[in-house]
Image 1: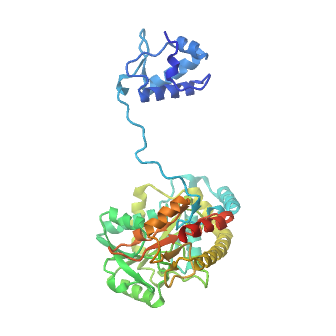
Image 2: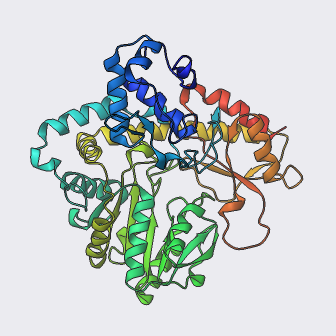
Image 3: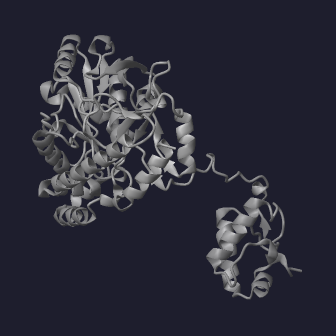
Length: 459
């Protein structure tokens, strides 16, 4: 009666009860075992499969408890009727393209240079010293040890004027901007100004809350302050993203004075402020007006995005509103990463890693610029782009290929980089360009990656 019945199941030879149960689940979901159909007795199926009867019994019992099978006293076991039209299990999203061989996407450090030994040592020291009480839900504002370490580090390295009680540790910069946007929206904010160009994924955050997003042009001195209108403005003064300029001292002063006069909040995105190659990094804008600037920093560019560590140094009047929003969000930065980060900063290991990374990225930028200078195509870095950061933005040769053609050629060579077009806010036809994240390729493969990039840009 059951001979060949198991052929409808995708089974390994001599399955255990778990494997048999999974094979039966799959067959039921796929419709190979239709609703109401009888399944063999435990004895018959065990004989056919050459396994112990107890193995089949355990599999059947598991599926009965999960609702896949129905067992009644004195009646055969059958497939549950409610599964006659099973829900599809296909992914709602199309599969992502395979990872590129050569990754030049901006905003990514060299992940192969992550300081594993220092991080592991910092984690061990932190865990040994952490009391059991710290393993509770904790403060949504962030662990005090990290906030104290950050307050010291930011004052010393980025000239940020803050205290631990004004710092909120976030689950990445996107969450930081989301928390701040939500708190400001609840206080009546209706629009926010962003630099034009700027990162579209970040502009989408306040937009999703119903806040109008306005683009304000950027020139070689930074954002055009005379065209700022909203009660909040998001800027990248140390290293404008993506054009790579730095805000001039006169424009910094003008922006701060305007914020004080108009009671405007400046959101300072200091995403890669530690990486200046030709001089000491420019200090934060926040240090000029701590009560009018919300400073945001992140470990995603210095260490790794996967750590999900970012921070806000807020004006006093915004700490509690943002803290309340964060508590309600329930998504807090992971504790062990916070503790390890605090220890890495206190031990000096973080400063050492940043110095090593700065030297590495300085050399890469020089090599990249040299390669661009030797191309036949007349691609040029944006005017006033400073020697800093993890990316370089090129204006494409006006007589050469378009952004779309460059990206198509890059895909053929398994090279990933980004077009400049989507970064612009205002409609129009800005000059074509590409944004090259030269920090992303691993050091051992940078030469080969650069060769592939040159082949894409100079073909």
